Length: 159
Image (cartoon, rainbow, N blue to C red):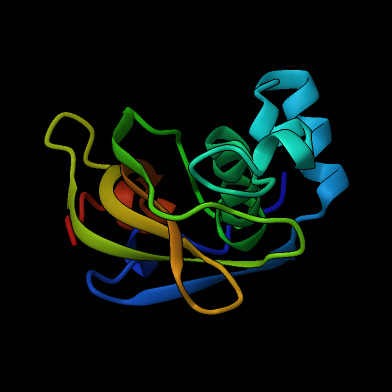
């Protein structure tokens, strides 16, 4: 495996980091819905017209999967990530529609090293996904385990 580019020391509380952009298509929405969330508002344009949303939209879980891909490509696959103990909160703020250009970013809201494992940091992060109009469509409040650089961890440094 390649050496991670981002370690705990590289995460700055309050700094906003961009994750990239992708576009969701009608075909993407329907394929995900057929496989995982076969509700009419995700599968059928005509049926979706009679819902609260009023048109075909992505499943909230599909939106989460899209954001996860942005997180992986824009950060995690190049980070010393050690996993996550879980999510604090997920909010489906606005529907995701066909042809939406979706962008992701995150902000670290707090961080600390673990007393029991000084080579491991715990970062609380707010991940957000926006549509092409810049409106937030999805938020995640979560924590992430991220390793310290081996040199800092070996010296017992606690940034």
